[in-house]
Length: 592
Image 1: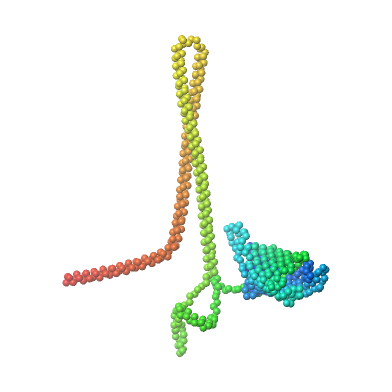
Image 2: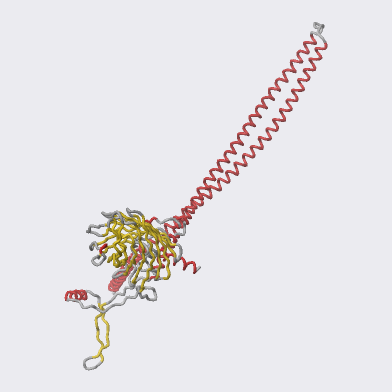
């Protein structure tokens, strides 16, 4: 675990330092070297006070000649010296180039003039960090994994620095001696990720000369491991005579805390065609940086050292004497010796000094922890209340659904019961109709039989076989009617039993439903009452806290009133005693 954390810290430091305008840590000074090589861009941060840094870069450049006089082949050494003075944010730098150039005249055919060895650039410059944005520490977000791993939009706000320099060209070789001129620029740096950074430089060079030039540089850097990092860069220059650009990339290797080795390769683009440039270099620093030491006491408070009083002028002494008149003083006895050598005690007035102690660091930490804990408790309480409300809502929803289903079930049962009752009524009607029909048929049969007996003599020609058949048909009809009556009676009996059972079921369902609903309503009422009591308790607590000083005031007022009453009572008792004494004296006189 320790090894991992150490590695992680190392990575964080490297991310902010490596390569061309590789970014640095939040302070100006960094534990590891902060180099601009092997690229052309600069980061807005300085190397820090007490640091002396040297950057050397050996390069070889080749391109097609495109002017009457040109230097198509150049080999040279680029040298940079960087250090900080006065402020951590301020950096002073010196840049120069020692080159060996092949000079040619190019009209139709190329003719070589010769080679020149000398300085091609000499620039004194200074840069200052103007603005440094603050980023959120996403690792402290513990409630949401998504937020902790999300992109912080504040990282789009760049670090801003300004650059100002002066080109001195009086002693340069002829091809580069175009006169002294100032140079200004804006330096931007975006820390987009722990490993990925983006640098933007915009310059206006050779100001006030015939060769005034605008240029920009875009650099993207990426940290591969603790020691290796890489970059991609694009540069473009615009002046009145030609526009040129180049693009390339490179690698850097951290050899030690104070030594870095780098290399790069880039393609150059001119009007005449393509070219290339190769660089190999190193950066080294002499580290004499000393962190500010702040002595602390046992409680973590900074110890203040009082220096002797400085000599003040006339008006300063006058104001001090006026202030002394209004200062509080106290008398102190001091042992002293008189002129004769006898020991004496003197009383001296000394101004009272109020000792003001700085707040303890430990106290601040405890206060901050309490604040965080209070905030956390508040959030947890809020989340609990929210969860309870959600749970109650779900319970209400489920109860509503359950009641709906129960009501549906009861309606279905009542509907079936009603159908059975209607069926029973229809069976009763059928039975009544059947009874009426069967009674009428028998009476008609008897009357017809009597008529037949009375008219036997008149109807001798009627066939005996037809009478027998009619009798048999009537008997069968009566038997079928009796069977139908029996079936109807059995069906009526069954339906009555079913209706009775269904009514019992419906009563039990309604009873259970009412009991359960009553229990639920009682539970809801109890919860509501508990919530109300809890709110009242909280309100009473707040009121109690707010009314503590008022109570003390009331107590003091009551004490004063009681004292007044006691004084009045005592005065009244004295008066009564005096009156009693006077009355006794009068009685004694009268008796005498």
